[in-house]
Structures are given as structure tokens and as C-alpha cells.
Length: 219
Image (cartoon, rainbow, N blue to C red):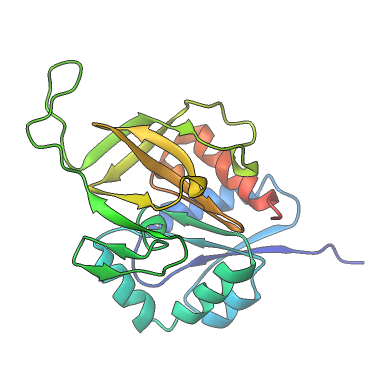
């Protein structure tokens, strides 16, 4: 009998840091039995995948437009309703109701809004000014026990590049927080959805561990 293949679709809707996300997921999959990763712009492939990764990079309005124009919107929404889905960066922000960036309606899968950092004139502990976008390594404080965090120490550092951040309406949807002029949600989770504002694919061993955990996760 052939082993059951764990097929993972990385959604290619014309936006996002697709190559590095895909390579990281492929690397993680090489350590998980029978996991197969496909980069796809085909809605049917997304529908038949066992789990889905939704990357995103750039302006929210552009990402939402391309998701619709590519014909992938319905298949992503179908995946979000019933199979494990991992959102990355703007792919996390897209999960909320609305973004201030371009006054853009989003997917409405997690109640809340995406807002811009307002740190003008604020200084950090070393006296330097906060810069927007936040760019670089920052600490991630796990807000809930979740299978995707398995083996990743609380307080680990991950790599960020962003000017906007998610503000979920309900605390139960916040999976992690990070301090940048105040605490913000750096990961969100709900049912079969997990997403990070930071880039696991740029975050060395801990980032790869998140992708491996996602490949094992069966909500």
C-alpha cells in the first residue's frame, strides 16, 4: 500500500516572498514523512491540498487585488474553512477584517483590524528612535499553548519586516505578542488557522521548527 501523501500548497497569487517561503517549507517537509510541497497558482490544487501556506508581502491592497484577480480567492477561503492554513506576514494581516493600509477590506476570518505603527518621536531603551518599518530580530512571547509552538522556547527571536500590525478583537485569537513601542499581536490562531507577522523562513532553526510543526498539525 502506498503511503498517504501530506500535500502542502504554497499559494502563488503573484505577491509575497514566495521563493524563500517555499524553500523553507520544502526543507521542513524533507524532515516529515511523506510531505510533498507544491507552489501553485491553480485553485484546484489548493482545493485538493491537505494544508495551505498563504504568504504575503507588499501593500495589502495589492495583495487582496491579486488574490481576487488570480482566481484563488474562493479556494483559499475554502481551505481556511476546513484545513490547516499558515499565513505569513501580509498573509497574516489578510486574515483580519480590514486594514488601514489603503482602507482595504480583508478576508474576515479573524475579527479585527490591521493598523500602522504610531511611534513618531518615541525612543527605545538605548535612546535610539523607533523606526517604521520594524526591521530585524525581535522577541516573540507565546500567548497560548499551541501545537505549532512545540519545541520552540517562549521568548525566541524571529525576523520582522513590517509597518502595519494586526489588532484582533478577541484576546483568544492572539497566539503571540511582541514589544515594539508596546505589545502587538505577532501571531494569531483560530481553529485550523495559524499565522505569523514575522517571517519563519528568515528566522533560522526556530522558523523551520514552526513549519515542521505545521506539517504535523491536525486540528
